[in-house]
Image (cartoon, rainbow, N blue to C red):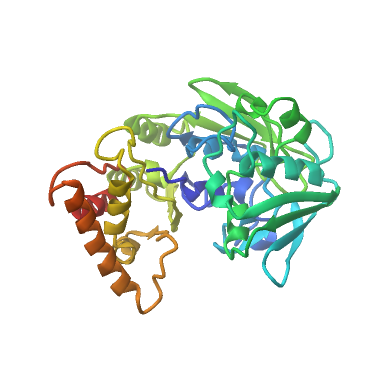
Amino acid sequence: MKCPKKGVLGALALALGIAALGMWSDPPARAQETPKAGGELAYSVLAEPPSFDAHQEATFAVPHSTAPFYSLLVKFDPFEYPKIVPDVAESWTISPDGKVYEFKIRDGVKFHDGSTLTAHDVKASLDHVIFPPTGVTSPRKAVYAQVEAIEAPNPRTIRVRLKRAQPGMLTFLASPWNYIYKADLLEKDPHWFKKNVMGTGPFKFTEYVPGSHVLGKKNPDYFVKGLPYLDAFRAVYITDGAARVAALRGGRVGADWVGATPTLDQASLKQAMGDKVVIQKSNWTCVLTIAFHHEKKPFDDPRVRRALSLALDRREAARVLKPAGRLVIVDLLPHDRDDFRRQMNNSKRTERAVMDNIGICDGQDNTKARSVFFRQFAFKIDDVW
């Protein structure tokens, strides 16, 4: 199971005397008080990413380390989630039939090497995710199955054509993994961004020390005036829980992600440090996936995989997990229609019949769902299977 934390949008942080991370904040007009500019923020990251290429990776460690270097086409508003707001696109329109999204690109956005961003860069970046070339892995490609084409009719226009209307497309395009890359670098080497950084974000890449940290310094040419507030940030890789807590208490880092800091540790930090600790929480944006080892029995049989899917009561899962603060995506089943329960009951009967026909007994222990952050979800799956 993978769950990219919404922390890259500034939603989940455990900070020492810091109410918001300047690199993810809005201009002062949106803030409750005028931020104090300057300084370097060091924060811990639970894991070191296998590469820096957000298009090809699936671990939260990538955006937690590198999001400040990049911009998106559009993005989630961290203060009014799930509202979508401009990033390199300053505005957009959607055709009456919902099949064409047209974005107007901001004028004067600069990459960190001084070159100007155009629609060609945006198209190349989206193509890299949606229509990856041979040899390029795109973990989120399936999300964009309804995209027919990405067009750049002129330097300041991006057009996304769909095969059929998909109301969630704007949300998909706002994915924090959709970094805007420089087109000519992608064209020369589609894997260039695995080991290198070149974006238009509020911070410029300064250094990467394997096993230690990533350092970024303020981009004076950032297209959002007044940002960033910080002079620099340092993403420090600390994988051990006790070491992360010690780093917070000792001042080595000024922030950590709430999801990476156990509740008991949060309580002990609050008790020990009092008002010096600020704990911020919000809902998470999660995608929970279950992957079968399809080369091992019985999962090599597609009937088994389908039967296990039929056995999941998605509506009940959403009801049970919602109090835990999880936003549960329950597939495309008609969960708001009157006939959902009837369909769910039919699915369960179909699942049992399929398993009986295959010869798998009720209660046979064929799999175990394991999760660190989502034990309730794992237990729910175990109960059903």
